[in-house]
Amino acid sequence: MRPTVHDIAETAGVSLATVDRVLNDRPGVRGVTKAKVEAAIVSLGYVRDVAAANLAKSRVYPLVFILPEGDNPFMRGLEAEVRRAGLHSPAERTRLSVATVPAFDAGALVKAIDAAIMEDVSGIAAVVVDAPEVSAAIARAHAAGIPFVTLVSDLANSGRDHFVGVDNIAAGRTAGSLMGRFLGERPGAVAVLAGSMRVRDHRERLDGFHAAMPVTRTVLPVLEGQDDPDLSFSLISDCLAANPTLAGIYNLGAGNRGLIKALSARGRADLCVIAHELTAETRAALETGLVDAVLNQDAGHEVRSAIRVLRAKADGLPVISAQERIRLDIFIKDNLPAGPDEDEQPGAAGN
View 1 (cartoon, one colour):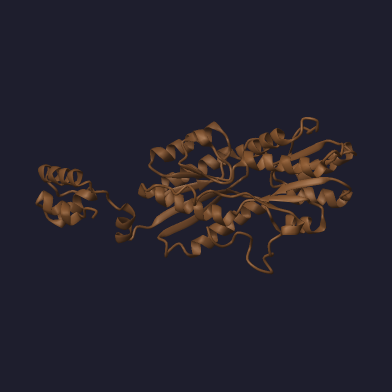
View 2 (cartoon, helix red, strand yellow; view 1 turned 135 degrees about the vertical axis):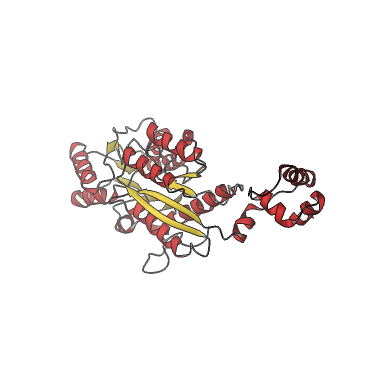
């Protein structure tokens, strides 16, 4: 049997109240008495169940999610999932809040992280920009004892506690492999639309895409649309006009609305188009044939995973890696799941 606080009290010759004071580092215990309790803890091999202790104390975990603002359907989906999880947060002893900052704005992100640190939250989950000042802000959170989870895009050398998202290099390789299979021997270059090369997930997807594409296929310089639909529309329209023999387009960011508008205006012709995230726009584009394949990550799973990880880190408990692995789904016209008007959103349950 596992040793209990009763065993500690009996071994040290003290009351349960004294053991409780020592375990919770409260005053009112003489040094010699504290030493006896600590010696009993060591000799018995007592391991405290922090989660149970926090439950007994009715501890509430204030957690903040920092997300990009703007016209990005996937990010708005993440925000909706956080707010949905917040409806159940009192029963799970969490208090969830959302802070939004301009997309790809490192300075605004740093201010939001520092504000959360000042509020002494129990954990921070953020979609980060790869910049030294952001890494420094994450280090400040770590120094303050606040667990930090990177969402969607990682910053592995920043001192963050955990990354919640798909393997973006594998996602890019998957897109490259699909593009190569779909195009076969068809001639022509391939265009790539990204949001910004300042975020690591876009760089990793691009690296994976290049690695999987046949060396004989020309991949044009990346177009950075800043995840803005109007800018993305303009960039793709100009690219199509300048490259009449273009064979394919890979959108590794969130500019799908502008991309689809440009494809609709031009006519699909024989382009192979691969995009990320199953939204209302990409679903409709799959159904009409404007887009050939969509790579998707489950926003609901990511939010639930981030909450579990932050609570585990706050309690000093291990993270169950297999449970927190975010899978990459591949959708084509023939395997689309039921839409929101027909059934649940894809991936809305479980995990």
